[in-house]
Image (cartoon, rainbow, N blue to C red):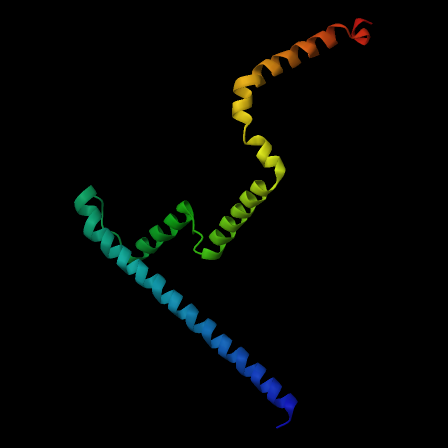
Amino acid sequence: MEPKERYYERKVEKYVKKGFKIFFAFIIFCVLVLLAGYVFMHLWNWLMPEIFGLITIGYWQALGLILLAKFIFGFGNHSSKGSKHRSKKRHKGERYCRTKSGYSKWHHYDQFWNEEGEAAYNAYVERIKNEKSNDPEKEN
């Protein structure tokens, strides 16, 4: 065999294997969905009529209730990658704040405000009021 033929043969073999994996994953997914409907139906018919006095349901009604619950409560994010990404991003922000000198200035903000801040703010407001009352453009 020529090298190109082997290359294409391996490539086709790779895609055929991938196709079979996708096909069987789809089949397994369908079986699990059908099994979930069956289990849900039996749990409902065992518990709900006796506890709450509700009627018994059929298989397709059970699947419909599962689908309705998924629409109402969401399909969920089952990916652990997303949660790890968010936590890494948050920790990166915390590291950034701790290392920058601007963050260290805010460390004593509460103590400053209790001791001097309110008086300084009131003095600032008075200065602004005085500037506005002495503004010659407003008098015209």
